[in-house]
Length: 348
Length: 52
Image (cartoon, rainbow over all chains, first blue to last red; front, side):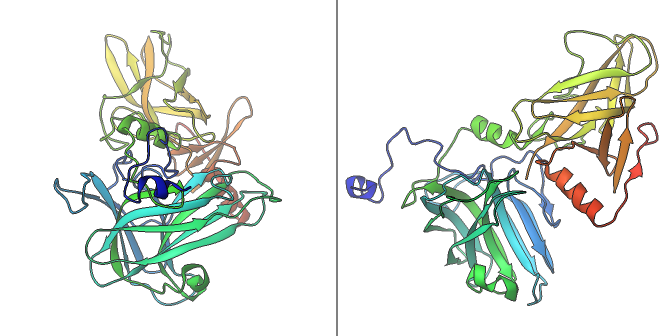
């Protein structure tokens, strides 16, 4: 007997079924990059969500709800907007809004339901949903699963699609395998087969509350605590700055004293430093180090009780899964500590 | 643009655009992009930590 039969289709599922949404940051609450807008192919904006685009211009931006918004029963904070313009109907043209879900084993062989709210700025554009099983480098060829297509209106609407993720029996899993969730917003002729001929579309697409769960029907959007959602995001991207502060901002707030325990370097030469991450990363992290003045690839040395020296060179930066080692290359003065801000990225 | 730097321990580092240090790890997407860039016939320049 199914859940619907027991509880009715509008009933809340019982407690104990948490973490059912495999998508992270489906409500776009977490914006560690403090991004406002980007047109770069492959760029992440809201944590875990990126655009892949070719041809014309695809603009991905952060939008803010006002209290009492149009999504019934919810008071969300942010939503994602993707605008497609200027594309021609040729092969190699596409606009995609997507999230890679770590590990191709995710939901393999299971029935899943996608649910989300969406609207458009005009007309009735279509959105196709695709789930690609990517077996990673050295793995089997990808399996592309078309999940369905919906037609938007100019009002927020909740959409639900159910599909079956293929089994991975007999497949080889390589490095970086993942399940790639994709909204297809626009595509040239070579996208017809995998998008049910969505075609080239110029419009403004808004999304909120995206959920992918192992179920034959959609459950209410899972409202995880912000601290939990942030930590889920930090497996892929983490920064030392305050949550609302963009990397590269001149600030002391959140900076890391990279020589902990009160230790002080004693000369003007090379000083070793180590940063411990807040959350273990998916893979060894790419690192960008900043001094407190906002200069990238620099650190701060402090002559304790005397002066701060920003804009100090660094070298030997080695990102790991749990932290980062680097060296302050040079410096002047006598006793120094080494401090910095950082961004660690282990995204797909 | 990518740069390479070899330290006193003969360990090689990859630096992207003078800002981001990329680990030599096949799971890291920046490293994958670096390898693709090399496969296209590009050659990284030497990185001097004190020059920038």
